[in-house]
Length: 257
Image (cartoon, rainbow, N blue to C red; front, side, top):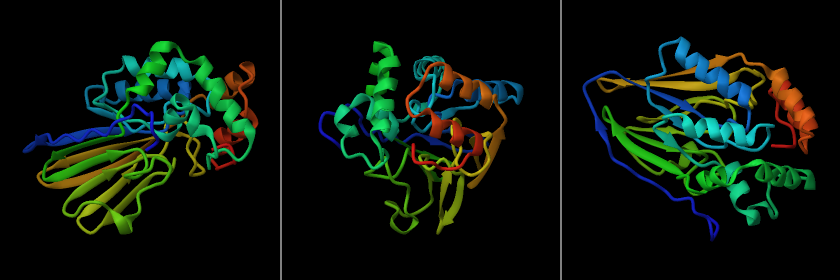
């Protein structure tokens, strides 16, 4: 982790046993307000609004609504708000130097545009985010992180997981859902709420269910108003918008990520 960052790692050990538990996990919103609104509407419509929600980071960049998204997220009573690499780029100017995610100067210009849209309070909120949440539930250690341990720009490597035993590793970053069993552990990735990259452009989140020592993971896809997100990118003349728009519509990776 780079010097000067305020991001910290938070490890908690909370034990829940004996009852069926649901966890809503969502990641990689990327300043997409229409997708966030569709997510909240889905939770309300499907009786999930009282279930604990865990956000895995990347609230800003690659979208037209960074300030609006952070404001709405801050109002929502989630259990966890983790930091992602794009959140780090916004709060730390040095993170933009020689960054592997920005193959052209347009990416850096876009990050600075995003930072300029954010209020002082919303920037302060991003600076205070933690990078990890860890607790125990129904015999499983739940370990939540944006990318992998030690890096928010890489994903979990199943051959080098840091713990043994029954662990649910919950991560984001790739924008692609993942449900993988590794020994007695699992790796779950809910995909991306705001910018899927698995050729399905609907918003994506996950539901984890535990109880009596068992665990299940379901990925939920939600249609949302993509053209509203596209129109805002154009109307606000967001730098780097051509590739972002193409990626929103096709859910295929382009060089702007």
